[in-house]
Picture (cartoon, helix red, strand yellow):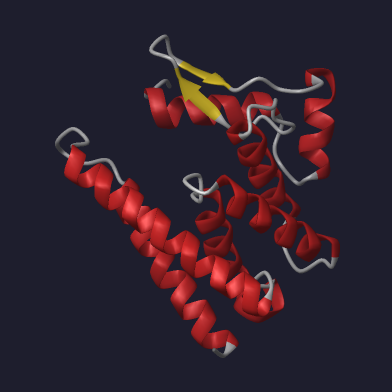
Length: 171
């Protein structure tokens, strides 16, 4: 697979990934949830085959949009935590080589940590326990904004407000 073919496939898969996650007119039913899980499983298996054969899709290979797509597919590999950890290692190596965005690694770091029951480092993962949107527990919260800045992320207060606007409709 050439870099152009890889980029095109990443973008195609990202489009499908995002489409199933768009708000629908009717509530999320079992059929749509099954489609969602199948899309995530298929994308996870496909991305794993790419990572095993070629390594992480690098910025110099697939461009900014292709790198974004690869990261999104890795973020949504929650059904396979062990594979998601493989993606984390591969993405971490790419970041160390300046071939991936530190912000992408920060989000994936938090996702892997939350999925393994550990506190997150960057405050990117939220949940709704029925009482409103809340961040998952954050390790060493006093240093949160320093870690976020080092990864190229906005201050937590701004991010939290953005998350609330998106998911709660707050002004």
